[in-house]
Length: 287
Image 1 (cartoon, rainbow, N blue to C red):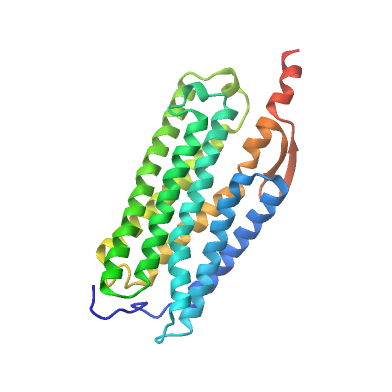
Image 2 (spheres, rainbow, N blue to C red):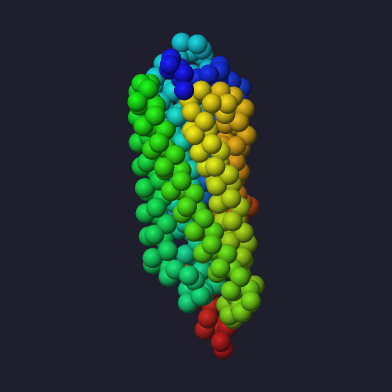
């Protein structure tokens, strides 16, 4: 780390900040519409995370107009919001897996039972969120001790996130393999449970790549190569997190919930389709 604290080691790009503000505003608006239409409340963290993203890039755009005399407010907003938003995405991802398992009627084959699965992973996500948020706030003080202590907290929070993501993928893959090897009658039906599982895999891997990037970024230090070159933030954070949000715009979890208990499902973005839940079709199927 350098002796002199600087908010940025480059002049933030107004073009990149505006582009990603618009992109995240679009996908977040669509998620908000899908949430209100389908009432799948466990997607609230995803929507809040989307708001964090576009507000964070608005703050970066403000900083870009202040170079080189940056002020604390916009810097602190973009630092904290962009850092913790993926933890909110993770919360929605964790909560969907238990619904996918129920849809495939596979609770007896899951490594962790449904009622504990969500609680375990969401608790880990909360710890990660608090560590990253606290660390980012401490770093904003600009002192040498604040930069060092805050960095340690952020890295710790990212490692917690990576550990829980690793366990999450292991649980999901175990369930996937078992259900494909010995499928039950529910899994054999023409139900898209595996499509949603693949979406969870994709989103989880994208966030893991981003978290690894952030770990390396913070381990290198405030004057390290990654923090000194803005392009890597947009390559390994902004773009990947935008892809996560779009993934769930397209493969929306409302389909899983609607297939189990009935209700509206978001299909291909804006289109809504009312689905009769599986449990409601059982009498007709058995007659």
